[in-house]
Length: 181
Image (tube, rainbow, N blue to C red; front, side, top):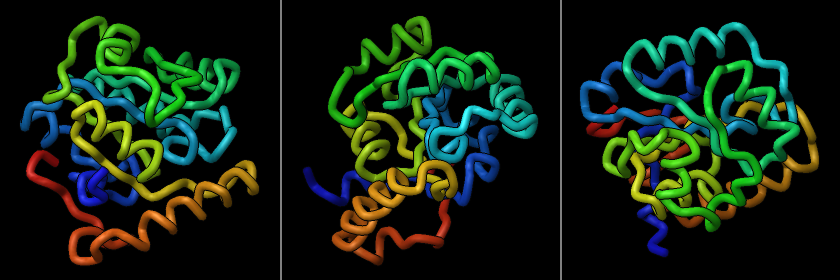
C-alpha cells in the first residue's frame, strides 16, 4: 500500500475539535468512531457526560454515528449503549470486514463510502481501514491512559509508520482540516 494513502484527510486534536457541521455541509452523513484511545482511554468504559453531549450534537447535525472497535463485546457494548449508537465489536481492523458489513451493522443501509468518515487515533488500524473501505479519514491524537502495555505497543507501531510518512504531508501536532472538514 502506498503510505501516502493513509495520511488523514483531516487531523484534529480530539473528537471534540472536529467541525461536524462543516462535514455535514460537505456531504458526510455517517461517522464511524474507533473506541480505544479515540473516544476513551484504552479499556475504559466510563463514558463522560461530555462525550454523550457530543454524540447528541453529532446526531442533531444530521450525521449518524456508530462505533467500530477491535475490542470485545463486553468492552464495546456498554459504550455503545451509553452513547445510544450501533456498534461493531471484535472488528479485527484494519483487514477484516467489508463496506456492506459496516453499512448493514451500523447504518441500516443509509451510507455509502463517499458520505462516510472514519475517526480514529491509529494509522495502522483506523486510517488503513478507512482507506481500504473508501471513507473520509479523520485522525485525532490518542487519549492516554488505560492499559499501559497495550498503549505502548500501539505507540511503537504508530512511531514506525510516522517515521516513513513524508513530513511535508503529515506532522504530529500540526492540525489541519481537509476539503470536507
